[in-house]
Length: 371
Image (cartoon, rainbow, N blue to C red):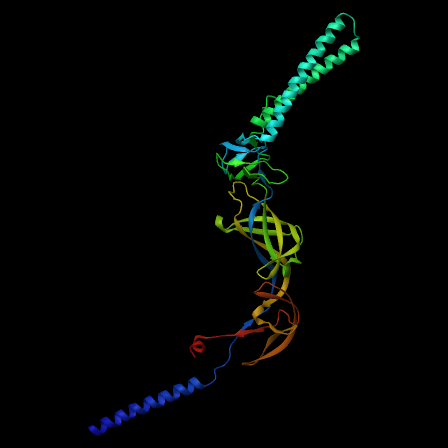
């Protein structure tokens, strides 16, 4: 009995050894190389590029005061729509002391001149009534009196403008009222009630009371690489996508390509602008990040194969055409002339036909990956 047990154990060990040897031998044998196979097709191939940028109003106007002073009232807030001439804020004047002194001096001189003119006119009028002076002399005295009166009114108005920012004669066009210069949406009001503001002059840009823009006239502004800018033409259609609005898409038309490059991250880029056609009811805000897809070139009904089937060698391109002889397959290397590529498929201008079948990349199986 013991003898049979030993024989059985020996047989099992032998079987395990032989099985292991056969398995390792099979694993060591070279496996046949399998390739993807592609048949050329006729398709439209488009080369596109994606440009990042943002949405902006074409014209954004900074509304500034006509006088220096303090903000006493803000009648609008960011997001409100205003029409041209509508009042946005009110300013209390802080008069310039030198201008105030000059205006007061002008008023005093006007009073003196007016009194003198009145005295002269009364004298001339008395003499004229006695027929001691000519009508010409009388008219000159009357004219001088009228001029003195007008100068007094002008001096009073000038003093009121310097002191209060408004006069009786220009009450409706008061410089203390800051009005919008265009119709549009108020994007920002960077000042608060009580803030000091100054008017624009030669030495200062002035304080911005509000930024106003027409949000119905928007542009896309972005940068394109120098390798692609040469393919752009004014009027080219674009697709603008705003990710913040659930990937909302708008049509656009290229309007402007900068003639000068700007260096960005070591690469030369050119600024572009495109007119955005906004849909009615779309709530687009200034400064939204957006991407623009623009078609640089297109090949219609082109013979094409997957770009992975192309072998690049220097300036030449090749494919491997499949030749079947019974069960065996051979591969003939053929030079082809390629054209446009969209990154997946590539145009074949010459070298193969629709009847050919070409070899693709090597098929990688899980078994090979495990090895």
